[in-house]
Amino acid sequence: MKNKFPKPTKSITKAKKDLFEWGYCLLKDAIPPELNKKITKRLIEQADAEKKLNIAYEDGSKEKKWGEFTPNKKSQGINQRVWMLPNKGKIFLKVLEEHHKYIKCVQNILGKDFILSSYNANIAKPGGIAMDLHTDQWWYPDPVNRKQKFLPVSAITRKKFDYTINHNVMNNKDLIIRPAVSNVLIMLNGMSFENGGTLVVPGSHLFGRHPDKKIDRDIKPIAAEGPPGCAIITDGRLWHGTGANISNVKRFAILITFCGPQFRPQENYTLGLKRDLFKQLNEYQKGLLGFKVWNGYGRIGDPTDKFLKIDPMLTGEMKN
Image (cartoon, rainbow, N blue to C red; front, side):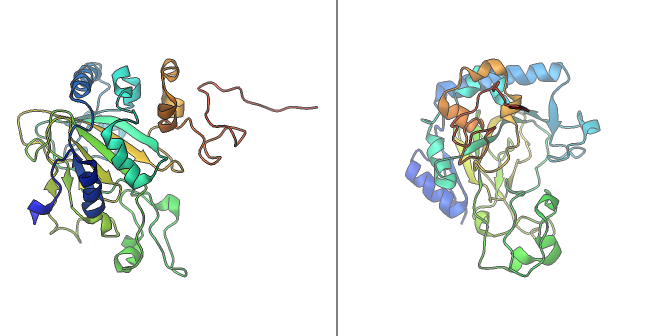
């Protein structure tokens, strides 16, 4: 059966078919090879500098798993994260271009309009442990029956879903949530089982629920593997997680998460983007970073405005 699962391909058509059937695809040359090399160099420079200055964020250890955002455990991780890549070098903005091949796959999941939820890097180092399986849209409310009690939306957490209370999703064979997220992981120096390649459960995007350690203890994920420049692109409902790096080399990857324009992103670019970078953005990039008004949402005044400014003129209290 494993032979039927997605393999690295240059065909957009095949990649889209894999996304629909398995919940993920492996797209070769998602970005040009030369750009891939430049990004890897800049990422290593940035990661080394953050580590030296003791501001690096690390996870992937028994003491600090992903999702445990406890400040006093800041230095107990193994894998290194580099956040807010648009601020960490102009070269990273070149990945956010409409002409790149991976964009067509994202559009196949989310449609024409979407925004950047997060854009960061994960350096999986030797000795890191495997991440728990999860979906990238754990926050999306599960479908409910008309008269059934449900978990309020703000009570949903990474470990608390409706089915843990009333098994609604597990017992509902007709309804399923739709994808609201697509994750693009670009394998800068290639990805394999040995170096901690992303673990996936093929077809899990259609299971209609989130993974559970007790219920799903017999499910065995597989590693998504590919050469440098290959990307794993996922349907946001896919069960997945970073693998354990049992090799003796670091695995470098950038992670680009996109979501529908009506949802709140993980990283707040309209507030956190360095001001001097804004003038360098084209309209497509401004849209991705949340500066484009979508059907009146995201505005700061007139709902007919198309784009926001980085330092807008705001109308305050007035009297005639």
